[in-house]
Image (cartoon, rainbow, N blue to C red; front, side, top):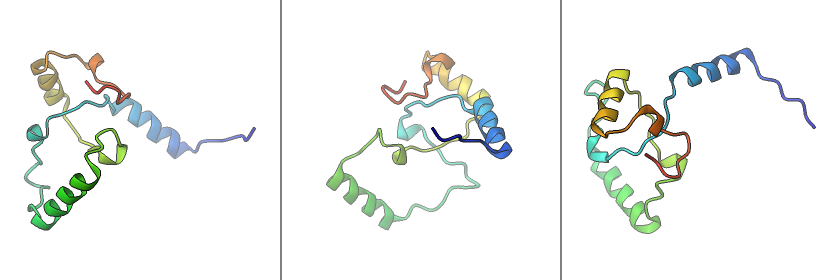
Length: 99
């Protein structure tokens, strides 16, 4: 069996993820609003391209490459969980099923 070691950087990154990653949840796309300072103009060519892909391949929601990573403040997370009548324990690392 191979002996794998981790670097200090990998251990630090893993520890930081453990402290900051709260889990995965399914969010209605209409609820996602990009921050004005980082949002880009809607590119109609890209919209058309994505529509063609979805028509051809379907929407593969469980594929990790179709997920968005988001930074959510603790305050907003708490508000969203309260509105959904859910708790932090309802978020999950397991995408089957998403809360």
